[in-house]
Length: 125
Image 1 (cartoon, rainbow, N blue to C red):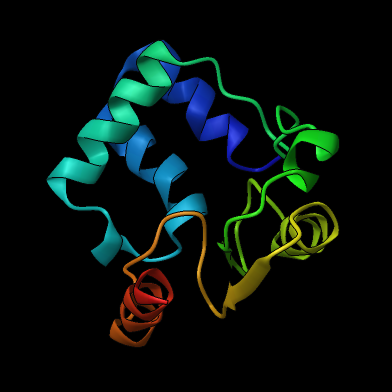
Image 2 (image 1 turned 180 degrees about the vertical axis):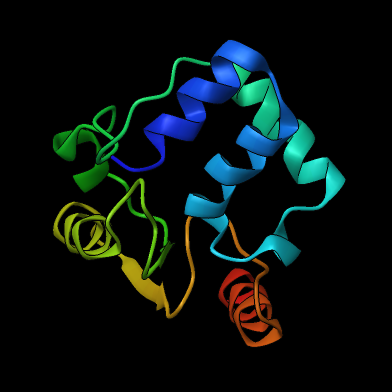
């Protein structure tokens, strides 16, 4: 995976330029990378063992018993979790599930107002 090279460079050197290069694979645009976001990424990369691929800690049998409405949102260009796979699996294992694919969005993004409104309306229902 392309983002591994700058991530390894960051892990070795702790230089912010490599943190930003790594983050851009997830964010797609620099305007998403404010100081708080970079701090969270730094803490994550420094202290958390990252795992690439579909979330594997959710058992389908347990999720099928979940009865409350669920809203699953995925970024079309998410380099860590394929929106196609995430949304397909969510529909498959979560009974009362609505799914949304955010076009032109990566793993990290600024949520458009229409999507924030959608979330608020979903919660109100």
